[in-house]
Each structure stands twice: as C-alpha cells, then as structure tokens.
Image (tube, rainbow, N blue to C red; front, side):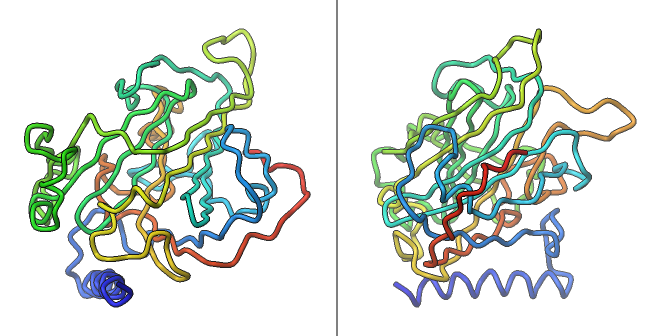
Length: 299
C-alpha cells in the first residue's frame, strides 16, 4: 500500500521536473501551485457552519483567493482551511460577501450559476466535485478518466454503470493530455456532512451582511474510488492529496478591474476547474493543531 502511494508521489515530482524542462502541458504555472499542510483536529468538530471550535481557530487558513485567470487580487476575501481525523476530512470556507444572495434550494440544482464555493478532491483515476451555496444547497458530480476507470474497477460499481455516465471534456481546457472522462451527475457522497452559517440576511439588500461560513466533513471510508493507487484511508503522516478550492460569483468587480468572477486558492490560467494537475498539494500531518482561545478570525 505504502509503496504504491509513494510511486504516485514520485509521479507528481516527475511531472514537475518535466515542467521545468519545458514539458508542462497545463495552463497553471507550476511555481504557483499552492502547498498546504493539513493537521489533525484537537477535539471534536460539530458541523454547524460556525467554525467556532478551537481547532478551526488554530488551523492555518489559505491565502486570500485570487482570480482564476490572472491571479490578481479580487474585491472580497475568501479563505479555506483543512483538518482531519481518522473518520473525516474537514474543509471550511470563510466568505466575505456584503450582500449575500442565493437562489437554488434543491440538491444538484445548478449551484455553479449561483454564488457558491466549490471543492474538488482528486485521485489518480477519478475526482469528485462539490459545490454549495448560502442556502446549504449542494451540487455533486463524480468524474472518472476514460483511460483507467474500467481497469481499476469503477465500471463494475452500481453508481458508475455506463447508463449513469455522461461524457465530459472539460470546460475551457478541452484538450486535456489525458483525454476524455465521464461523469455521474446524480452522485451523492455517502455520509458527508455540510452546514452553512450566514452572518447577515440572505437576499435582503436593505442591510449589509458580513458574509457566510461553510463547514464540510467527508468520511474517509467512502473515498475508496479516489484511492485506487492504494493510498491509506485515513491518510498516513506525510501522505499527499490534490484538492481544489474555489468561489464563483454572479457579480464582478466594476471595471477597470479585470474580474472573471471565479476566485481560486491557486489560479488555473484558464476558465476551467477540472484540471487536477492545478489542484493544491495537501500534505496530511499527524500533528494536531495547537488549541487556541483567540477570537475567531474573520475575513
């Protein structure tokens, strides 16, 4: 198990070495791809969206998100953080939004047409897309690469039968070197927990809001199809996963700002979230976060 995962890490190193020699085929500059260390929780996490546990107060947050295309600063603050324990991967977002808006209320509505935050979790043969708005409405898709999903066993699983899969070729980066992929657009991640807390009033522009916070928990036990290289579930100290963190808005900063409306931890360089090679490198540390009694940090 450990050896297979080490080979996967070596592959990423090889890709970076290839990039330095001019072989990089992706629109995100390799020197801009972020790296982050996720520490273990120091106490229980209650998924209510408030992020008031000492572990969240002590967790390292991302830098302020930047524009997906240019990496330029954007008008409102967005930051993410990651924690974990033996049962769950925890992800949080702190979203500054002076006028909080949301429309969609049904699971798998087109949340990407709303103001939302998004999380992608990538394995070697598949990746998972998650989106959420201020109503705590979620949108999910499980994607698998054409070149491997059959041989690793995905095609034999009920949720990945051919009748449930739709061909997908990216959004803006439609010539991915790996080829095409298929998506199950009715997928639901088993056992996940989601919560949103709004500091303000949704869809009421008569007042000013501070924004909203998001709290997510994904069971490691249900990530087996993202771990087809044999990586440990839960991860071992030093294991590396690729995750992507973003925010999309129906509004943009006024000109002359060149605001695309898509804000990311690591820019992709093209209007497309579906490029796992551009995702953040997240290293999992067995060290617990240092508990803090400091006031909760806001954007």
